[in-house]
Image (cartoon, rainbow, N blue to C red; front, side, top):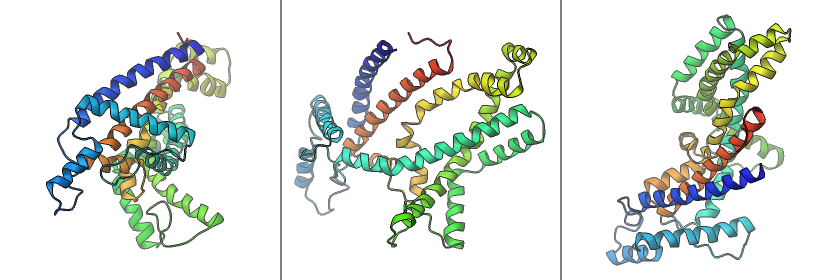
Length: 331
């Protein structure tokens, strides 16, 4: 397994280099200027040119690519080692903030929201999907199906706005932002306040995910339950829990292991809508605003880190395959 992991890491490095080249070219050569809209309307053209020269926006694209990734890995080394004396090189053209430290802080804000949303989605989807498969055509299955279609039909952003209107407007309980604004809380009260603020958008974000994933779980379970080895296990006299939860569920879970590869990069794009609606200053909203402002360094850094997280997620999924299914050999 060690040799397999080493080979995969080498392949990931080559893939990242290719991704970095194409993503950089696409973003760097795209039309648009982040400086003209950020400077004062009365600024002279010389001021704009000075800003562009300082940030290296007018350099040849190859030189710009080499300079950017030299600065990126220099700053990344400081983040990993915790070097407080490091002089940060990558800065936002829009806000002049240091890119990597800001990205780390934004990730810490987004992480609880994404993790809780995923936890709720997966925790509810499997019991609902498995129960529907085991009681196919019966009342629980029909109720779950109707509720799933209803949950899928309601747009998430619409539900989010309704919840804010009801909880905040009618009940007077704040749900916008990661914490209650204008109130100083400490200790357990601060923790409960933060938990409430993250729980509401997480539940709404998981609403549609539970509906889709539970249907997918049901389909996978039904497909596996029709296999010959399941009928053989039943014929041998194994009890239902052993057949369904040890044999059927283990094989039905293989496609979901593949879905795990998308959890890490979901930090960048999976919560943009809810971060905007609930005023969360998180990673997805930060990246989206950078794209609109054509903030080159933030966009390319986010694309590179998101690609790296995707490749890491795929590697973890492949390793989990060999654990879930002994027939899968790492070669």
